Image (cartoon, rainbow, N blue to C red; front, top):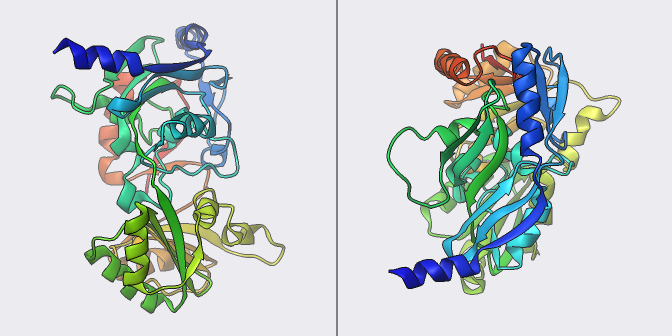
Length: 368
């Protein structure tokens, strides 16, 4: 029994970085003692999601809290501090032929581990690769009382009970300042290919439904400007077989296009900045395989998520989403929205972790 455990220890790696946890904990404790609000910030790549919230008090940065605390390639687990950049973490994992199983948006900024967990947003691979929440095994945080708390662990299977660590995913730092997160990793794909097909929204939906029924190594779809793109990732033989099965022309042997969609660097997301642009960007959650056919849309996740820029009023947008058995939320409105049905439970959790409400006040609100 001892040999495998010793071997696991032998393969453990670290990247020291800088441990700023004592300073962060002391800063939150001091703010709590004076009931002074604290705005937690990493690289700022997702600040636009909450920047219009009525924040006050001190700004507390996690950028000096960096490094890989523990990495066990043979156990497919990595633990990194909140300020660690995602691209640096990706390079460390890539050296062992591994990668994070999710692809969180970075919005043109140097996204960090803490920001990815706090925002809980998913990129194009969400239906196939899983979400940030699926990958988080454990966290260490500082709560609103300045206490350092640890939840979960660093193994794929852990003890039964409430999975508190995953509550931090998507909480935008309102439950605690994230110090570090333990996440599962997976082997990086041997081959990647992006296929492209000119087609309508209805045709794209039909292809997506076929993909969902077939055992193909698909890790992303996107229909925009009349073109459907499909990302394949896996073994070289598996990708080659999928290309033959789908019969769609190869566009590229890399995922650069899907990186632009993930990070909102695709021209679709820049149109709102053009002088003659109008309307609000909405994010729609729809059933898989849905055919959402509206002008100025980008549809991904095999039809399950649509981005729609429109000058239609909220009632019309919500009605269009309901017609497809889905729902819509405005994106980048300055405050993350919690579904009203779960809002009361989130408020109770918030009170338990941050009784005086000092952590990122106003960053989340109940949806209408």
